[in-house]
Picture 1 (cartoon, rainbow, N blue to C red):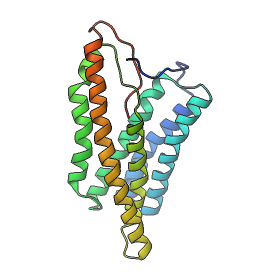
Picture 2 (cartoon, rainbow, N blue to C red):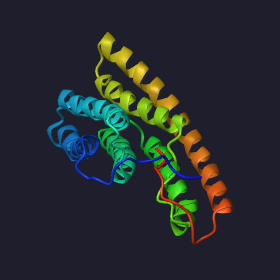
Picture 3 (cartoon, rainbow, N blue to C red):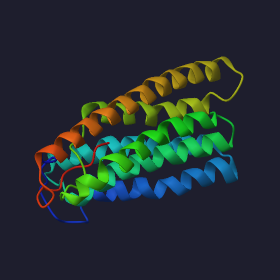
Length: 204
């Protein structure tokens, strides 16, 4: 089972630059959220991160700029955004710490079960599954709504309800996709000997 194909080995492609920008937004978001407590600007950073997540994938396919590096950067940026947002929200007591543990446990389970065996077979990742992208999309768009819903006005309440609905759906899809990736990984481990196996795209 090979990962998704790539078009170039270049590092400085437009999609990769967008991924680097998204990664740079992680510490900026935490600074705005925790140090400045500037929630509106923190939401802006989250919105830009969500938009670039969609845009870099679209441009990579449309402009034939899919790269090995991009296949690692894109899901890495997604995971860092999700983890940073959860930790920041928990520190601000916007979400409970059990939600942080619940979502982080999914990645811990994946990286401590199938990834060591996959890497020994030459795989750096697995093909992206639709459920994984849907889960990431739901979570990245849930967090700005949750943050905007920390007030007492009616629109705060609406944002809070919509945000938590997306969090619940996103968390469920996140775990579902994680179990699918583990199943794919087990299949790869069974089908490929230790000395062989191409590198692929990282599951999101």
